[in-house]
Image 1 (cartoon, rainbow, N blue to C red):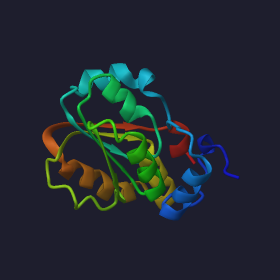
Image 2: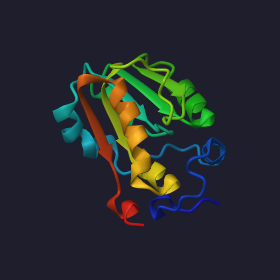
Image 3: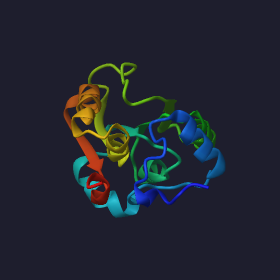
Image 4: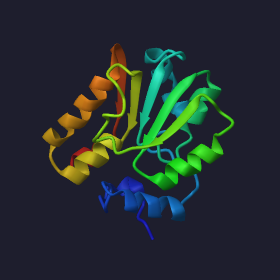
Length: 166
C-alpha cells in the first residue's frame, strides 16, 4: 500500500494518523538512512555513552536498542505515532535505558532547557522540510531542539541529500 520511503514522497508525513496506520500495517523494524553499525564510528566519536540522548522521530527503528547494546545508558525516544511508541514500549520494557514518549517534535515544551546532551535526528528534519516545503520552516524545530540541549551538546542530523533537492 505504501511506496518505498526512499522515494521521498511526502504523503501525509506530518500527520500522526498516517504514521499510526503505517506502523499497524508495517510493524517490522525499519531504520531510516543507516543502521547503527554504519553510524557507530560517528556516534561514538561525538556522543559519550553516558550522554542523555534524545532520539527524535524514533519510529520502530532498532538504533536505540543497538546503542544500548553498545553501552549507551539513557535514551529518550520520541515519535508522533502512538502506535510506534506503544509497540516500542512493549518491545523494550526490559531495557530501562530506553524511554518512549508520544510527542510532536514541533512542540518540545515538555522538556526543560538543557535536558539532553545529544540529539539524534535520522531524517526527520528532511521529512518535516518536505511537509512544510520551506527551509526556514525548520528553524523553529532546530531551535526547540537546541533549547532542550545542554550547552556542550551534540546535534547529529542525518539526511538523504536527494530529499532536499526535490
